[in-house]
Length: 283
Image (cartoon, rainbow, N blue to C red; front, top):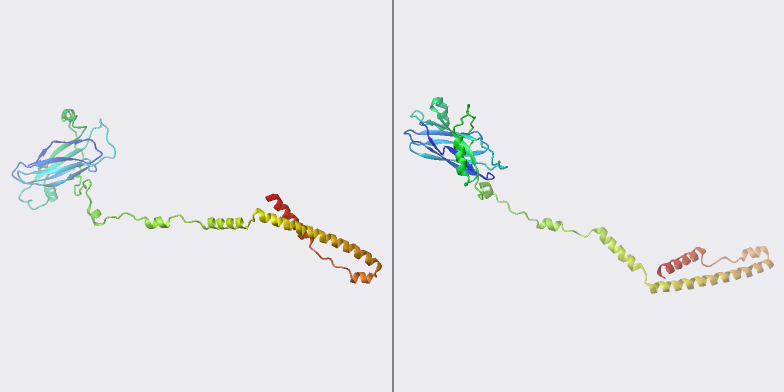
């Protein structure tokens, strides 16, 4: 006893960049219950829900066959080589309490009935009729050896678009708060820049104005003139002292020799240099 499979072929319409679903109906026309298994040659590309089960007499079971989204769209001339295999076994009274796996393990090869289902890639609804005629011409082509079928494993569910999973609902992730980080990362004035500004202000404040420089220059010139007059007076005194020393004894000349006094020559040279620099930079 086997199940009737409708449709006899599965056609998936483009585009394949998203999940495409087709319904495979398994009908049990007999008087005994039947267990079934659905296998495919490309288990990584398809998801079947359910991939095994039981069909009561006169009942029909809908099986969802999902083609997973592809990373790259196949060309229009590409032909699909994927196939499905539906295996069915009648449930006897002795195996009524057994599950599907144990029934298939205990059943003989002759008791297992298999039906192959081809998979086709359809271009669009407009070209569906022409594609179907081409596929009908290829129905007579049979393979010498049956391909290896593997159960696609339909024990998981593909979440629908926009549907949140239980993990997402249980632990929502709040949006990150960058307020503190922004405050901490706000640019602060650097210490070297502040120190430079302070030093610049001090230098600008230390530079005297033009009036002050003129007054200082006049004082320096007056000081230089006084020093010159003092040096001239000191020369005259030394000459006078020299003439008097000729008449006096040598011992008295040594005891009463006048000591040199006045402004050092280094100070005079410094004042001259200062006045020259002031006149060069400001006049």
